[in-house]
Length: 217
Picture 1: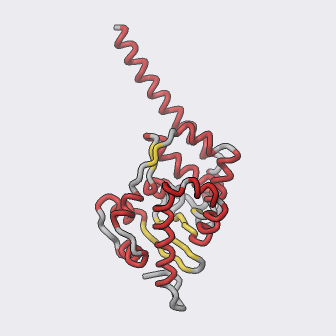
Picture 2: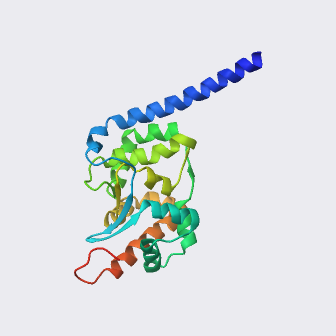
Picture 3: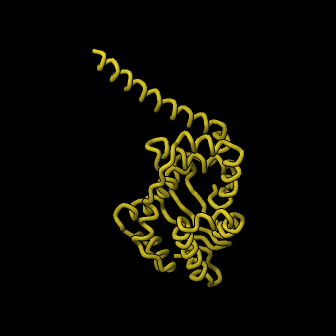
């Protein structure tokens, strides 16, 4: 009977722990709900890559299908072609699992240094209106982490709380320069992903130099 009692208590403890996590995440998002309400109705549907006036839209569902099966939609095939990237390398990047404790990262991202980092990266990954970037980034990271303490780049895009998420290539270069010291220390981990993004955006610009068009076919 004592064993059963402990087992029941453990189940209650696990349920309570998960409830506290989800409740904490809900409270975290409450402060930004009014700012997001005007442009948020569901998770992100489109990733829009921009470089100055040039842009290319990728459907998030197509990105997920590519990550899962390797099937390429027309826009993904185009980006792979102009960037010269190996499809399997990009798939591995989309599915790369970063493991980090949810509660720890929750505290970090709600601290002053954490919000500064979110502000900086909110210039690179942002909403259409560029409002509530900090809250949107924080939600996109923490929502998948609340399930199993893991998040992938694909899950980040899937959980971004507006219908469109923009990746600004010009601002990406600027942020990399501002954080050059940190990136130098993390070069082994970041070199591959950053090179892929740079190739995508660089190829997009080259293909779109013809006047009269701001979006690639």
